[in-house]
Amino acid sequence: MGWDYISPLCIIILIAIGVVSIYAAQHYYDGQQWKMQLGWTGIGALLYVTIASIDYKFFLKNAHWIYLGCLIMLLLLFTPLGLRRFGAVRWLKLGGIVIQPSEIAKLGTLIMGASVLARSKIGTLSDSVWTIAYTLITFAIPILLIILQPDLGSSFPFLPIAFVLLYVSEVPGKFFVSILSLGLIVAGIVAWDAYAYHLYLDKHQLNPQTSIGQFEKISLLPLKDYQRNRIISFVAPDIVDPKGVGISWNLRQSLIAVGSGGLMGKGQGKGTQARLGYLPQSVATNDFIFSVIAEEHGFMGGMLVLLVYAILMANSLRIACMARDRFGLLLAVGISIIFLVHVCVNMGMTLGIMPITGIPLPFISYGGSFMVICCLLQGMIQSIYRFRNEY
Image (cartoon, helix red, strand yellow):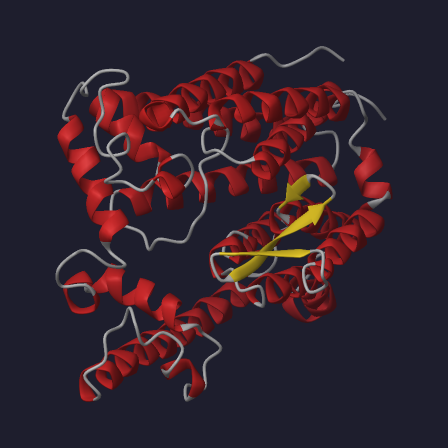
């Protein structure tokens, strides 16, 4: 029942980088988010040790209750407890605490999905159809509730988690071929809808920034116009924002920050894009924190962050292979995928190779709910390691 020290060391390094970068981004504004991040880190550390000390079988036995609790929290968003920010109801205000249920739902849904597959036998596609259906429904319910907030970005990681869990469970390949075909069809429909939206704006000579809400009234797809703007701004930014002062502003400033960092960066605390407000304070400490790191520490600093993440995820997969049962294996692999998706999408969107979705960077981006959930997830990895020989 010894402890694995590789993951905690990586976590400490990432948190330190995050706090220093948040401080640097807010220095000119005398921001206090770095202090709040330290507070959330303390809570996360306590939960990490607590979860790591509990046999992860506890989550298998209580998977249904954990999952139900997550769904209830998502449903509470549609009550007066839901807090509206930036046009969406994504946060719950419980007394003086504000939490984001979608982050907690990733944890609960992963546990439930892993428990379903761990308790089921996978055979041929016809033999496994009910298990596959049950698993997909388990993931579909929270995805739907998150999309209704609306928060399309936070719903994205659920799909890779579901399919990787099914793949590790050795679901027949025909299922994945069918899903891939369906995904391509859906992607084509969304692309056509975005193109139709552009034609609509051009025909009626409308500004995409001031006409939000008009096209969604006549479209058959349940997308918001600001989401269509994000799609077009990724594929063709010169169309939706030719002057670069609208929806593509954050991305353009991020690219300037990353590019100006060069090989070694401008130096700690000497970045300008976030500190002078070109990269807005509302995103510089969370969604675009990697841009701050790249500007101040350059390509080498960015590669260091990527290396630490690679070690953290590789170690999680190593522990997954050491798990004493199928549930531990699925749980550890699912956690690894959550981190992989967050890292790839967040870094990708700051570099302009992924759409902007608002997915934070684990242990580095500012945010209480996400910090706590990351610590809980890694606490489970530690639990799988510590109890790997228990029967």
